[in-house]
Length: 455
Image 1 (tube, rainbow, N blue to C red):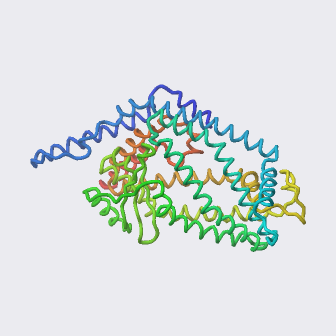
Image 2 (cartoon, rainbow, N blue to C red; image 1 turned 180 degrees about the vertical axis):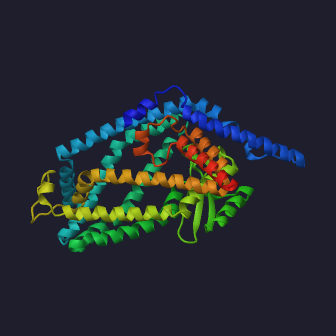
Image 3 (cartoon, one colour; image 1 turned 90 degrees about the vertical axis):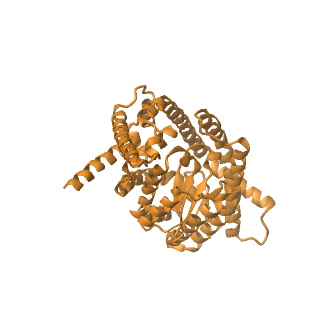
């Protein structure tokens, strides 16, 4: 599928279907602009709407078509090389006994520098596990660093997206590693103790623990962790701020605070997201998004995002994640005591000398569960794409159809989104439908709604 999409990036002719669709948007926008200007002139109003300021979309998309193709091609080729390297590295580690070697190394380090005579066997396993994870994290970071540097400072910079300085990149990496230690260490200790304590049905207790942990992290990440990397400032008093609160009130969304995030200090890519529980909902706008689209288009985009909440997609995704977690750990419970399985991967374990729990977890999720995960991920991707169409429909029914269409075009334009998309590749990889499919769906909905009004 990567090869199929790579061929799409070699296309030099602007896609006909996208051209036809965007031409309709420009035509309708031009008509609406003329009507609005005429009405303002009749009223003696010298002001202008957001649409008056917008240039036609099609010429801009055509102008950036070659750049978008080049950006997509560079990312695809780099991604394929990274994937091939990942397969070779993973296979080599399995065949050469990397995990058994690192576990033995961690055991020796623990015996030499940490263990006390009074420490129990169970406590020693936890200590060795923490050393093991520390060593593998360091090795993994070093092995992946060249790929991250190339992606950030060559590909993203080449196409005008990267805004990170080397010092900011290093600082982010150090912060991430420290957070991994601070949060990951206690998490691993609790997980191992629950598995050991839970008996035959330990997966039920693990499931409950994972549920509580995910709820806590959903609170901590936006409130504590994300501000460590980005600055969040309240949106200044403006007509846009008033309109966003009016939109929230319109659909009974308990908006508590509205922030602007300095995403531009790392990248010129744009985004918007929501977070918070109960009556403490918050919306975050990237500063890049506010520069790229008009106020009306921001409202249309937020209408789409709020649609996910109103239609229950946020809760649906949370429930699916919990079901996935429960199923995965139930599967692990079926393999946990299989001695032959671990011997096949180079571990000299017996009934009297069982496999370390962390090793069992890694082997299960990296090998046995991996193909199952691919199937489940594909199914959830299909569901997510359906939800994206539904959220688009919600924004359209709020009256933002034209603004959402132009807003999506601008975001695709500014982010050099793929304009030529292979259907098989999109079906498997795209959580969001391709631009032309979303535009056509909204146009079809406009026609249907107009006919309903006439009827």
